[in-house]
Length: 242
Length: 180
Image (cartoon, rainbow over all chains, first blue to last red; front, side, top):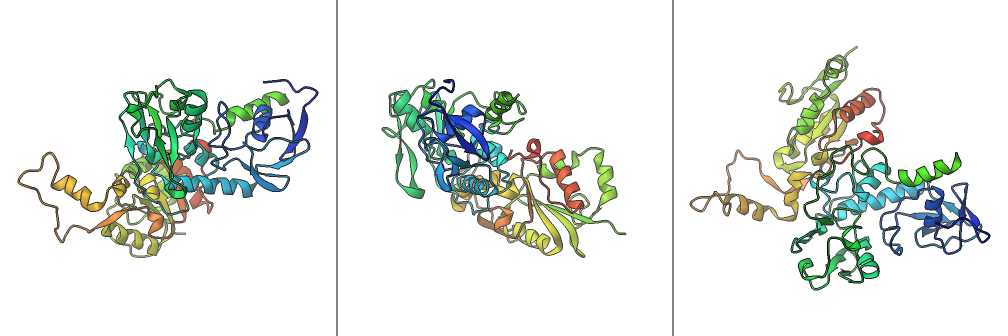
C-alpha cells in the first residue's frame, strides 16, 4: 500500500476524513483507512464489477457503488446510515430467497460472506417469499464442486478465471432472474480449471467449493464465528488512531 | 399475579429446537418460576383452553395438520415466535421443494432401493395430507419474531425468552445470531 504522498487528498465518509490517492475507489480508500463498507461481489485481488450493490453509498447525495466509484477530492460519502443498511439487508434477503440457501446443511457456513452479511445487517428471516428455483449441480470435476443453489451471481469466479488464471472457464448465461453461472463447454470436468486456480478460491458462498475440504475447521473457529465480517478492516482503523 | 403462559409446538421439525430449549440446564428452574407451561409437547397438553402470552413454533408446514396447529397457535398466542431454521426457511424438510411432491413420493415408496412388489404410496385417511411444498411459518400466519439457528443455542433461546418476558424485542447479540 502506497503512503499518502503529495497527490493524496481527503474525502469525508460518515463525517470522518479519509485519505485517498488518485486512482483509488471509495471502497479501496476506506479499506486502507480502516472504514468498513459492507460488500459482497468485491474482492481485493480482482477488478471491481459493481454487481451486488451491497456497497451502495450516498456519494455527494447520489447513490452509487463504492467499489466502482473513483474517489475524488472533497467527496462526501454516507455509508453507515439506517436507510442504506436497511437497503443492504433487503438485498441480502433477496439473495437468500432467490437461491436455495440451506445454511444448516452447507459446508461454507461460518465462512460464508452472504451469511456473515445477514448477521452483520441483523437479518433474522427474509421478508420475501422463497422462490425455490431449480438449480444445477456439477460434480464432474475431480477436485471442484459447483452447487448453483448457492450462487449469488457475484461474478468473482468469472473475473478471476478470465483476468488472473487466463482461462475464462466461467461466464453468465441468461438475463435478469434467469441469469445462471455458466461453465465453458458445459461441464466443469471438461474445462482446464484446477483447484489451485484463483477462480476456485474466491467464491463468497458455498457455490464453488474444493472437494474433500469441507468441515475441516471446527465450529467456533471459522472466519465469522467470533467477529462480524469487516472486523479485520475496521481493526486497521482502530490501530491507526492509537 | 398469574404468570405468563408459554406454549410450544413442533411442526415439520426434528424436535432439536425443543431439545435446545431443555439445554438451558439449571435455568429451567428459573423458567418454571417465570412462566406457566400451556399447550406443549413437554406437558402433552392437547388443546388450548384460553389465551397464551408466548408461543414458540418449531418446524415449517409440510402437511395440513401442521397448518392447522400453526393457525391454532396464531389464534391463541399473543406473541408468536418462529424458532429455528425449519420454521423460518422450511429447513431440511424444504429440500424437497425443488423436486416436486409426486416425484418425492415415487422415489421413496415406488422406486426406493428397499421397495418390494412395486410399492405403494401411503394414502390412509388418517394421514395428514402433504402440502405441495414445505412452507416457512411466516408464509402461513403472521409471525412476530424470528429466532434463527439449527437449532438456536440454549443461550439464544434463553436470551429471547427473557427479553420477551420483559416486554422487549429479542435482539440477539452477534455470537448468538446463527443460521446453522
